[in-house]
Image 1 (cartoon, rainbow, N blue to C red):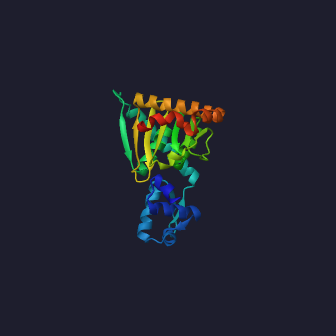
Image 2: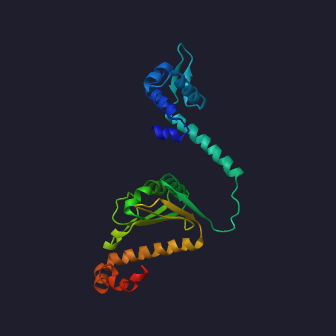
Image 3: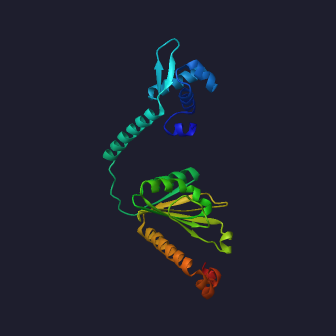
Length: 259
C-alpha cells in the first residue's frame, strides 16, 4: 500500500503517516511518531505536508489532533485534479503534424513496463499481442484492463498459458523452440502503433516503438497467418502431419540454411 500511495505523490514517510491516521483517526503527532518510529520533527513535517495536500485534517485542541481524509474523498479529489490537468494539457499542447514515421527505443524493465501500459491503455478498438507464455505476465494486467474498456484483445501465446483473457490463441512448440535464446514479442494497437522486442537469458530487455506502415503491415500479415494456420491445424492436424511430417519438416528441410 505504501507503493500505491507513493504513486499519487506522497513520500515514504507521508504514506506511512497517512496509513496510521487511516487506521487510528484523531491522534496526536506524538502518537503518530511513536507508531512510525520516526523523530517527531520529521513526522510533524510530514503531517504538515499531508495537510497542505488536502489528505489530512487538523483538530484544534491541546494537543493538536490529526485525522486522515477518507480514502474515497481523497480519490475523488485526485480524479478531479487529474481531469482538470489533462484538459489543460490537451488544450495547450496540441499535437504537431508528423512528417514521417518514427522509431523509439526503450531499455530496462521499468521503461518497458511503462511503454507497454501506455500503448495498451491508448488503444481504442483492437490489440493483438504475440508473446511467449513465459512473458505473458508483462502484458496480462494492462490487456485485461483494456478488455474491460471494450477493446478487442487477442493474445497469441507461444506455448501453453493460462491468461484470464477472452481470446487466447496458443501455438504449440516444436523441440527446436527450446533452444531459442531470444523470445520475441510484439504488440499491435489499432493497426497503427506497435511495440517489438525480445526477452531472454543474457539479453538486456529492449523494445522498439514505431508507427512505420511497413512494420505495421508486417505484424498484420503475421496475425493473419497465425489465425489462419491455427484454425487449419486445429481442424486438419492429422492430415497435415501425414502429408508434411511433424512440425512441417518436409516443407522446412530444404530451407534450413535460411532459418
